[in-house]
Image (tube, rainbow, N blue to C red):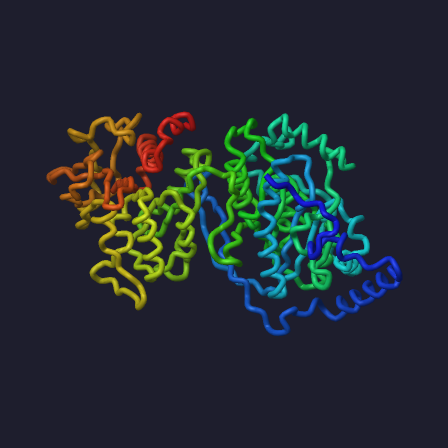
Length: 569
């Protein structure tokens, strides 16, 4: 794999090596820059590079909030935010030219092109870019962006400790730190790591701390950007320029991005609106350490920790379009949960299920959630282009035509689909529901994809007795599921008869009514593996055997993971 380029003569790389003032008259140039910066700050901030009123940055902030009646469980929520570019700064944390961990170098190099695109997007809209390659300020001592930062008047409201590393903030006391990083987190092959250390030494670099600059792939604009690694300096920059909002990206999330004096913790505890770009970060995590998951699962667990206790996160596609970035080495199947229903609170129960069953140990998990503003729009559904499996918990959302096409495109691809409870009428309008112009009522999702035949439900109240019908056999989905311990707490759905392409796994019955299928698999025309259950009341998730049923269904649908599921439990 190609490593970082170290050609000092590379043009347009944007580092201090390329953009320093010439030796002749350097002191005069430096003085002029400092004076011009002082004038700029005196007149109230930087000018808009666009020359006109910039468009707001439209963001979807993802966080995890405690569930009031379930200790230790969190709901995944997204909310829309609109940030003024001139009140926003992007901080690039420790994207060094070299690192003592070779795999860290490779991952940073993979992130850099996308990160540079994001910085260009933000810069062109008048966002302040701050490059923070810690410990590398000598390289940039004469760089215009560094001089501009130095010239910033010291703020009069410096928070206590803003110049120091922050190891924990009070909110983090509510949960356990998710990964063991006591060994430094290097995940290199030992032989390769030894060869890398020897190479660094031959280059004249300290193998334990080889960085001297920010990587050349990230552009530093000499006229607009700033360079600083000092907490007091960066805080003063934010104050002088009226910046309320901070976006952080870079490495490493569990160390520098969280803990630096300009990191997430300091920004959050001192009142900035701060977010993490979760697809433009990485961790120092060694999979041979607890919780003994892949490197990329470790990063996901750290993102989850940040979303619970520190700040929300966003993704780079919110600026660039397309889909979020993902490391090429992350081979975990990508499972997308689409959750938008108001009856059974699966926006609470499904994230709790994911955490309890440790699905992040096996899968890359993404969410598509209700916009909170328009019930018939699901922002971010384009992520299905990256997905390996779709899990639906939606109730009567008639979506824009282009979003329905995205769902249909996924379905016809033959990839797995799973549905729970109201998925049988996920995208179909009720008889009393008006379909907005440009939207589609996809009534055929139930019969043609799930193989179902939803015709309403019996009255609520009676608990549903669950049995395994004759002919269900030893299906992998039923492995280690103690069926007699299953009970349906929600009303029994009327779904008979099912499509001929289905195989019923479980049936449910209530007094004085015929039994109905409550869980089945289907083989639609696409050939996909499809699973559906009409179970999914919030109380159903209190049953270990129901959670096992769902976990087994995911493993079966995605394929090849049946045996690993048992070990993960």
